[in-house]
Image: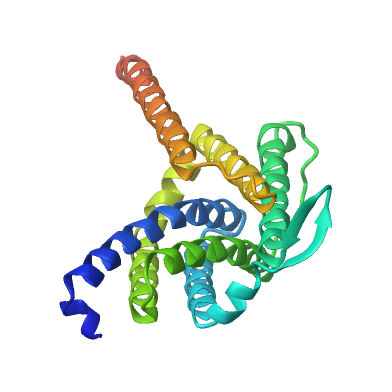
Length: 248
């Protein structure tokens, strides 16, 4: 831990921790939505287990840096495009994320309201398996970012652990907020589709700047916050009027 006294590594550590938190937000959203299908009593446990798995996955990948570097070796060619192991993981993960988010949006908009969903609630183990599959993809993206920024394994692992602890502390608040506002949930699922699309394009070596994606997401959230505030103001007079009529 001698790097703590080195200003250069300290700055890199702080920057990497913030980046890990930012990169982990989409992971929290996915975990919140999937765990929301479980009974309320086990949802916190699913979120903690999901984030713990994410942390373990990232640390294992960091300890397997040689293997990660080998993932960039081309395995085969599709339409003149070389596909490596890393590309394959990103493409499959992106398609899974797009498909899962699309089904979730369909279920939210037409499932229960259409009267067709007397569905069996997913088990705890099936939810954890879904989270684990996406953790692999999100962790790979996160680890590649860490490797590109810092050359000390201790700095990387410490940043990952602190970032995951931070996410665990705020995961309940984020989850409750997402489930309390249905429009936010749809917006969050749309974000996951966008992230899935970016993973697929990344897999085909078509890089989309994360800055553009996060700006679009931040702007959408800002607009939705304004909408929630406006709706809140419209609902208050109605509630006050109803309370007044009840007294009479």
